[in-house]
Image (cartoon, rainbow, N blue to C red):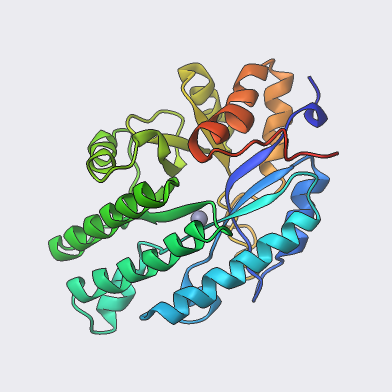
Length: 281
Ligand SMILES: [Zn+2]
């Protein structure tokens, strides 16, 4: 199989319509054979300012929805927005003088707005999670409550949740929380995952070693770059052409079934999207 016979989805990439390359990054992805993108809003403090009320979240989400429309124009497939609240916001709010509980409420209100964008149509899924760095007990507890709120909302509106969390391979506890809030664990995706993961669906960083593990594991998985579209940190992350490049490599290795898993079957199962029907080359 050749790369132009399959959809190629980057499951987690950021576009920054304020400071970044924005549509140009999506065009670079397309030039290398990429067809579909899930575009995550950048943290509020990158796009505008530290969000401490609903209106700033709303503004950041709308900017991302508009960026996605422009990205779709340069893709043979299409892009979808995934909107939510970056888990590190809690630390910024606490630094600014809010209690952990107040920060939790602000972040949950932001997630309410994200769920509204899903229910009203433009967004595909919600993003939440908890800090990937050491925090005190109050912040940890509040962060878990924020994440559970995201599960609750997603269960209500019927969408998936992408998680930003600490590293690790066992997230079965988090998957049971999702289930308790009414969200099937198959609709919980751990972004920036390695090749092995228990609990949620893994979105594997497009690193050859980790992809090889994912192929061996033979579970559902997605692929991503976590490209951040930050002109000040050009080499900080994988570039937008990385997922198409890795798909080419996987096809050379003869892993056609795994390519189908990551770019057709898992996206359909997790998000209900059809990357074949939405592709017109
Ligand atoms: Zn990200």
